[in-house]
Image (cartoon, rainbow over all chains, first blue to last red; front, side, top):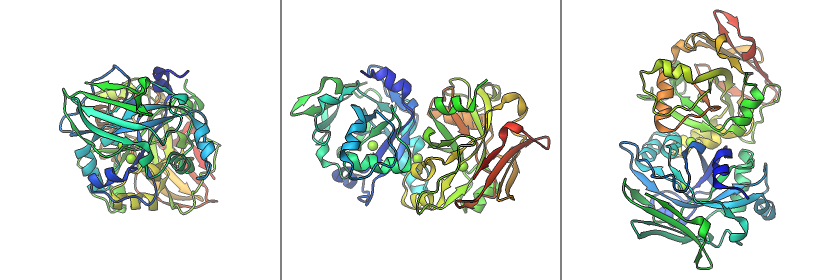
Length: 221
Length: 221
Ligand SMILES: [Mg+2]
Ligand SMILES: [Mg+2]
Ligand SMILES: [Mg+2]
């Protein structure tokens, strides 16, 4: 069984999809994408359970984005879009993640046509849960993601609302770059993103059939 | 001594600076940046010596960008801009690299404010040389980079022309994200970038005191 420490130690690439839930696309005044687009976060941004807090760089407005993460179990390259079984077979397990974003840094980058790597890549900008064994989530397109700030529920939506489903995501990524064992894929965030400041407490979790999965729990001061 | 195979196998992050030579900034009609900006390439894009060719994805216009690469030898975090010695001490050695870029994909991303990760991240989009021991380049700000396509010299400039020098780059990166042993930093490309198509032969090298460094030689069909 993968431990979350070994996942952090071995992860070489964190690939994240943007704008993958329609209501989240609207809340940021973005256009609904015709095809998935992706960006990288560096493995150095991973924050292990209990290793918090998230560190706010000076002048950076931090936003949370709760997301279902896939831990890749084997090499995939040029996966076909209709190869649903191939996609599911490539998943070793899951984790819950908060894709922390320097929103003002990202807005500035978008305006200037610059890369997102800094806005997304600060140290501690990727709090993750423990490793979630595959068997805990029988259908990754039917799980409820939630996130609260200071016990106020901010995000709560089902992964069935993804615009591009997991097999399509893995197909599109793997046609650009090989996915390797240990890579992490973040599948997008539902509506409700917003700012956090130092001292706020974020909690996040994942429910299957109405019950919280123990391994998915995140609490970050 | 690090082998280039072990560098590829252990590399977790490739961080690249954009627009770091004034004449290259002009040739792409960009603005000269007031501060360095960076983007990530995935380790999966590394192409080892002799492992060519570079693969042109369908519909993608590939450009070459020859760059001096730094192989990081130890953890650095929050390095100060004036800590030149600290920066040089963090470098384990060098490599020469070609930062292949899907220029049309990048232009589209810039127009739409989207990330650069796909334009920069295709498999084979980072041909590298063998590992260059540190002693071979006594002053990394005084080395001549060159690149030819089908024996036509396209790029040839000295690293003294960098807008932001290496200590400043490592300071700025390490204030955003921790640099770890095995990470690679690409220091920007001089003027002369341009397209290559399948079948073209790229050669690149690095001269110190007018003589080519053997380990820096790249030849990619
Ligand atoms: Mg996100
Ligand atoms: Mg990017
Ligand atoms: Mg470049």
